[in-house]
Structure formats: structure tokens, C-alpha cells
Length: 398
Image (cartoon, rainbow, N blue to C red; front, top):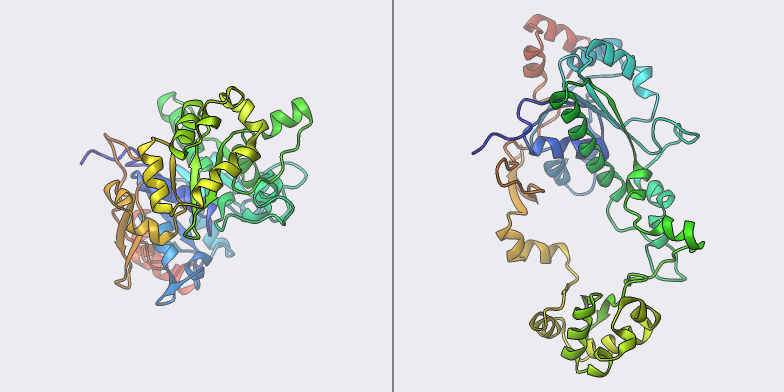
């Protein structure tokens, strides 16, 4: 197997829960050596989130694969000094505390950069390191609201809903990982130095907002929630089938729309000059959606998909996780992999994404138990057995 691209890059992860750790997981999947710092006792709160097996979340097995765990009490000055020493040897430090926390612990950028000019520091927070809201607590749900995403999610006239996942956290984590890669390129390929990457949850979601702001800026248009439709692009929606389930149809290309109408037996709409282009279809989207729904109600999801695929119309079922786990395409693409937890439980987790042909990522280590690698990491940092025992006796490490 070819050497992984980030092999040799040392990452010190101080984050908890989702955003910072997701960025670190992404880097670890492609070879970065990630040492995760956790508080003694309970460790990262994610260990207890959602469904547990032997007191540990199965989510933990996906989020913390390929990482090592070291338990350090950052509330103690000796613990802070210990992390500063580790940061002096690291390439990247990732944290997602409230702004000011690292400075309070004596680990602000000025301190860390002076000790290690090559260090890259990824800082993920709700609102960023600057601005009037920097000190407010920011969670993914709040970021979704502030970014405009939550307003658009739901049915017209009904309360906004969330997607059921912490999108603000994971999308911020992806932006953070991208920032780290850019900073590594600047440092290593162009002879630069380390720098701070300032990622805000709400900004990461806002970055995905497509035409939302340009339309408001140009026309004063405030986009409203539209349920399963895609406003301004038609037709694209989830349509009810006679079996009680829904089929997703995205026939918003001009030629695709015509093929769909032919497959439905509605050549009159397919040949209508007023519907030949998207702008014309948008004006009559209710009519089009009603015609498609009238057809899908005569079908099951399976029979509708058979017709749609024969007509080369983009379409699909609305998957549950059960559908995902049983889908042969997921398996063929190795998007699902199995890891074995420290307690011996086989757990399926998302595989490596994206897929590189020359230097693919890999899952090479299970998620660690709390503090599992404390002694090894400190020994590699130059601490002898007596010094490690002294730190443990003081409660600095566990």
C-alpha cells in the first residue's frame, strides 16, 4: 500500500464532542498521527452520547478511530505545561473551546507560536475568535439558525425543523480540515510558518448557502421554506407513491424533464414550449408537481423507480439507515467498514471519504480507551518512568 499523504504529521487534538474531533478524524484517516487530549475521569463527553455498549458510545468508534488517547487535567498548571510541551513538537493543534479558554490556560496563539513557529492552530467555535458574539456559547443547532439553514428546513407555514444530525459541527470540521491542509501546504511547500485557522460553525453553514444572499442583495428576495422542493429549480421533489412511501425525482434538466413526461405518458407537458426551460417550469411548478404526484400515486416506489431508471431520470428511494446498511452499492464502494471496539464489539462505521487512487486513507486503529496511550506518548516526549509516575500521583494525568 502507498504511503498515506499525511504520514508523519503530528496532530494534538484538544477538542471535545464533534467539530474539532471530526476535523482530527478526517486528518487521521489519511495518515496523520493524532493524539487526543481528554480530561481524566469521564473523558470526551461523546463517550456517553447516544447509544452505549458497555458504557461507551458506539458513535465513539467512528469519531475516534485512528487516534491515541492521553488523559491530562488541563485545569492544573502542570497539565497545561505538559500540553505546551507536546504542542512544541506538534505540526497541528486542534481546539474547539469557547474563545479565551486557551488563553486562560496559558496556551494562546502567541505563546504556542513563540515556542513552535511551525505550529498550525485550528480553532473551531460557534461564532469565531473575533466579533461581538465571540464570547457567546455556540452549538450546532444555534449555528444552523444563525446561518439561515434552519429557516429553510421544513414545510411552509410550519415550525422550522433540524436535519436530525449536527450539521454545523461536521461541516465546520470539514472546513477546519481543509484549512489545515492549506496551511500545511503553505508551510511545507512554500517555506512558510504556522498560522491560525479560525473556523466558526455558523460561517461554515453559511458558506453552503448558494444563491441565498445574492438573491436578497439583487432583488430583496427572502427565500422561504419549501418542504421537499427546490425553489427556483423544477421539478425536484419527493412524490407520494401508492404504497405509502415517497420517491425522490430530480428532473430539473431540460432533456430529463422531457424524458420524465414521456415515461409518465404526459407528452403534452413534455412538448409544451412553455416548459422547455427551467424558468418556464418554475412558473408552473405546482401544475408539474401535481401531474407527477398523480402518476406516482399509481405506482409503488419499486415500480416507479423501474420506469424512471429505464427513462434515465435521476431518482431514488428515501433511505433509512437500514436501507444504507443493506445497499450493495455502499458495500461495493467500501463506504461502510467494520471496526472492533476495545470491548470486542464489531461496529459498522462510515468508511474513508474521499477516495484517493494513489494514496488512499485507511482505518488502522480502533478508537482508544480513555488515557490508553498516556504513558507511551509521554515517554516519546522525553518523560522517564519516574516523571510519569509523579504526574500521575499529582492527578495531572490518568
